Each structure stands twice: as structure tokens, then as C-alpha cells.
Image (cartoon, rainbow, N blue to C red; front, side):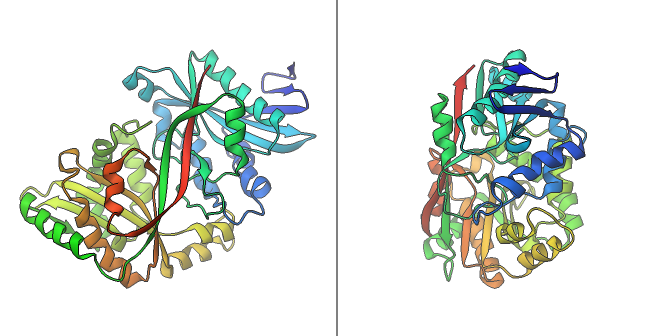
Length: 388
């Protein structure tokens, strides 16, 4: 290793540059996969550049109240060939009694030197911070995309997940990373009608637990009534999932402002107790933005907004972003209420196919909800880990 200065160093023919968390510097970091690595890919779905930059900036992302990060880019002959983020979620480590460093936002050409240099940079940073293991790809929290794609490389991604080329798993395994956990995703045919058995279960559950669905047509009223409750329910439902760290009050307020003003209300289902009005379940879907984001290349201007607006108005694919049910109501058929509520909306809006969110492979309770549908397991993604 040949040092240049505190921000840069060279490993063999690869130069590693530390990227400062400024809008100008992070723009290079965020645009690398969009404009260079996946420029000609028909499956890679870029995130909105402005959103990605905000997520990576300490002053914009409330996760930095308990996280810290570092960003690096790899260059060869002055050209970008890779990127990586090093992350430490101190809240997660404290609650799980771990010293886990994370890596995320990792992209690279298929070149051993490049991969070695990127991982070495993040390993060194994490070791200096006292971490003893390195796990990823992960984000700051579970609200960020996570997991290296290991199956489904010819499938179009979604805006909530990571896409990567098929050489990524081989490169991680070459370095000695081993599987920590896998997630699976499903391609689901929207049926022509509500499955009879699902409707029957839904009717029984409503009576047994005195619960029902509610719909909102006024967005401000939704936020006032259940904005906080939705994300607090997510905290309860996801508490024991891999890598999850509890959302803080500041994060909840951040996500309320970030997501609820834009979610189509038809694709949002809430389940409440009839007597107390307590929220016990939530299902969130959104028209697929994949093709719109591919066309606008992560940019809203000058014409990216048009593709996004078109995706919201006319679409035959819906992304099932999230299902959360209070722990005491899980495995009791409450999920059926979400689908008997959402499916008529899907029929009306013309959705023909649905893409599930990523689900832990051993989470049979969640995967059981697809038993009434025609499904295909079309993607698998993996978190890798190694001692450092």
C-alpha cells in the first residue's frame, strides 16, 4: 500500500479515495452505478439520486444519531471502478451485544484488485473503530436496501431492493465471506377475484378479534390519526428480524414526511380494533416505479417526473412494500384482512402482477400468506459475514 494523503491511498494499480459527505462528493458516489457500471443494464433500477444523497448525509438522515459511516471510491487510471460504504449502527450493536461493522452501497467491476481494495478499506476503518466482524450488504437500518442478489440476475429489480451482477457472490466468497442469512422474493399473479378461502378466513378473523379495515381519502387525516402508529407498529412487528434496529422518534417523523405524502391511499390498508381504534396491522403497496426509474436514470429533471407520474397513473405491476402485524395477532389470519381489502383496489387499478418485498427465507409465517396465490420464487439475496 502506498499512501498519498489522509484521504487517498493506492493498492497495486487501484487508487482508493475517501469521499466526503458533501452533496458534490456524494453525487460522484451515487452516480457511479447509474452512469458507469449499470449504464446498459435492463434489470438495474436506480434509486432517485437526490434521495440517495440525502440518505448518505449526516445532516439529512436521522439514523446518524446512532450510526457513523465512511465512503470510498476505487479508481484505476483516473476512472471510477468501484464504491463502498462502511457503516456502524451503534444502537443495533448495543442492543444485540455485538461489535458488527457493516458494508453497503457496494458496487464494482469484476476485478480482484478492485474488490480487495474496497473491502480492505472498510475492514481497516471498522477495525480501527473496534469492530470484530464485517457484515453486508446492509444499510444504516432495515429501511435501507440490503442483501447481495444471488439468484434472479435476469429479473428487473425494484426501487426498494439492490440489484447486482452475477459475479458479486463469487467475489465475496473468494474473500472468505460466508452466508449469514438469505432473503427471498416472489413474483405473484394478481388473481381475478378474492380467493374464496382467504375471504372466509378474513370474515372469521374480523368477528373473532373484533377488528376491521379502514381506508383514508384524506392524507392529512391519515398522518394525524395513524402516522406515528404505523411506524411504531413496524418497530414492534420487525423487532426480532435480522439486522433490525428500532426506529427513533426522529426517524419516525422523518419517514412520515418522506413516505406518507406520496403513498397512493388506495394501496394502503390499515387494520384496527373496533372498540379502541388501536392499529394492529398495516399493508403498504405502491405502483412499480422500476421502469420509470430505469428511463429517468434516477433523475427527476428535466423529464424524469413525467415517467414517475405515468407509473402512478397507469401500471400493471404493484410492489408489495411492507406487511406488519402486531406480534400478538401474528399467525392468526389477520394478514388475510389486508389482502381482502387491497385486492379489490388492485382489480380497479388494473394490476396484473405483484412483486413481494424481500422476506427472510426461514420466515414461514410471512411466506404462508402467499399460499392462496400463483407465485414464483424469482429472487434470492444474501447477507455475508466474516471476522475481521
